[in-house]
Image (cartoon, rainbow over all chains, first blue to last red; front, top):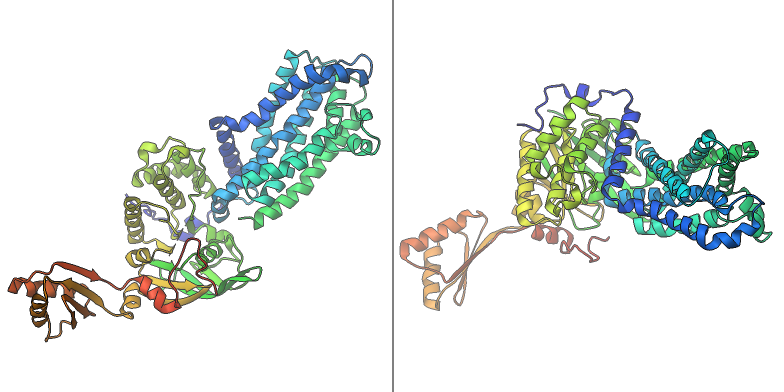
Length: 273
Length: 321
């Protein structure tokens, strides 16, 4: 039994190109990251328990005070849930930062660098795996929403379109936090460094409260930043009313964020080992 | 004559102001083990990272099996295996899943990956643990799996960066046997170590590096030969017995014999043979020393002689300029 019992001439076997290599590599990395979610359920706690707590807290604790500032006829829970979906994928994107930083610290990234694999697969395999997770988490949060009285005023297509927007936005957030994780290179630091990025995005937004209740100097940011725009788009798609502007703005934000932070994180990855 | 498997010429790499590699030249013959010996911070890991296409050198040239690490990194990656200082494996995957992932990423055809993983798991005595997540493995098992992972694509050139750091003696010896076996099958191994004994045990040739420079490059035997002698030291019950021992050992070319009270010292450049001769003569005359010790010159001594400082590791400032 020999480790090198291969009669193929070396250069032929070593330089054989396999078509679809990029897809095969990316799928291998996606699988590896999803297996981790299955085997280490703690990894899912942050992205599931936390939004459930937020739903209960905002729905039952702050809901009464907040409903006064809403347009007449809109129950607070119907306003809240689209914000919760968006907030869920932003918080969940911290896992992208922590995951990549963990791979850097453990030396796994170094192994990947020395393998003849597609350079892009390590990062896109991570962000795509986190998007697959987001599909499940968003579906779960919708179920929680229905339990606490959330209702759709449009139709199932509005709901699916909203879910699609949220998952696309989550993908863009994964690239943002991939940049954070690669920049710091250590899981604990990645977690700490992610919060200051995430907090203004989630809380200075229309996710939980209408922007009109905020100080005037904050309103322009809170109105147009991507979390608010995406939450507004999902609200329009589930409550009814004109949705096109917000939907287009949300997609534009997501595409721009993916382009910017995709480029930066690929640069960081090439240098980071 | 074939080209050497690894050629390094004038390699330089600095991190900011600090030169990690300050002009390194090496040549490693195919099918041999080459040891890169030096303390922490000497530049060993940097050299391996450049050869494994992970870092770009600032100057100089490095080739693996005739492929330039800067101009043809993809071709180099198809020819190398790398096992680093830390077990670079996914703790959430099982042993089998880890090896299969490396098989895919190493661009092996689908059909050969599963049998290859099984074969390596058997060979590294991990078959029983194959379907357990790595979180449950011991340190030695993880290290074995790490090295098995580096072998999945059957690399003709293998880089082992401090492969036995932190392993217990049994695991270390097992790993040494596996490395020897691989080389017996034709693999070229470049091994870094700060354990002087390890370079001595495994490598056919050793480069001692310090402060990013090669300060010696020779066989372990010749490095040690330059240092001199094997010393056999014996204590006897009294001066009279020691005197008789002196008389037995002195005279005819056994080596230098010295006596200091009840202690007799024989120094010789004939290595371990001197001990056999000493014992043979005692046996003929019925003399027995109370204690006996043999001290071989070690690569530690080599390091001290070459650099003027000990091969200090962990947490000391050794290895600086």
